[in-house]
Amino acid sequence: MSKILILANNSSGLYIFRNELVLRLLQDGHEVLVSIPDTEHAEELKKEGCKIIHTEMDRRGTNPAHDIKLYKFYRRLLREEQPDIVLTYTIKPNVYGGYACRKEKVPYISTVTGLGSSFEWTGLKKKMIVTMYKFGLKGCKCVFFQNAENKRLFEELHINGKDSKLVNGSGVNLEKHRFEEYPGHKDDITRFLYIGRIMHEKGIDEYLYAAKKLREKYGDKVSVSVIGYSDEDYEDKLNQAQKEKYLKVIPFQKDVHPYIREADAIVLPSYHEGMSNVLMEAAATGRPVLASNVSGCKETVDDGESGLLFEAKNKEALYDAMSFFVETSIDMRKNMGRNGRAKMEKEFDRKKIVAAYIEKISE
Image (cartoon, rainbow, N blue to C red; front, side, top):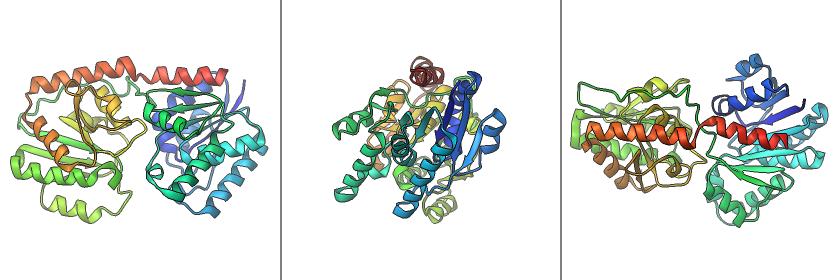
């Protein structure tokens, strides 16, 4: 059996969305090492049988000194542990971990989980990130992409590994996110819910605008909520929205399934995604989803059948979609929920995603 090293930028993404792959590797008899900068799910991974390696990393920072230190750490780690294969996730592990693997001649598989804001840069900064990704992925045995647009862009920019594969994100665990009958709220209130980081690129400003306008039109017949934590300075805006009673703020929750179950629709007005896990989980639960018509969101929705798509960065388009949903019948909402579940079963079962990784690792 092999020694497999996983490089990730946080334990949550690994444990919540990729733990089925980790467990499969362990069950197959492989030794699994996990390099992560935080401890949130480190204990759970350790109990499953993984060796945890704490790794200092500034996830969102752009300090060159910190990044060079991370690259050197990865090279030292590869020499010390001598893994047979390395799996990398997200930009910094992909770039610095990938380059370290190439220099140390260790085979590696990388996953592009989304492009983030860095690919919206222009000029020298854009050229720099493209060059870094070229260095990181040049020797990669296989680059996994979570949506076709990301794959097309990398090909257009000549950012290539030795092979590539398109999968439907991380997929969704259909047992954990089981189908739930549509809520029969007796109070006739339409409940919208956003789940995720509170930040500009997730469309929070548009969501706040739509929430306020819905309150003005429908009063207490609409409830708009958010679950998450502020990645940016939104505390004052959220507090004001709560004070004016057009938004409910729910603290970060490890288990969001009970909240999805009670919602009438899940809303994600994001500007860009790799493949939205929130939308997959909501659809698997049988809830209609309202999402931006962008890569990483639109793939999870059959517009008009399992939810509604609207133009990203357009607050009026978001408001119109939410307002339209308020006016829909319960029967239509139930049908959307059932259609969403069927779509997840057919296209997004996480077991299929795990099988794709196992195939490449075996090769």
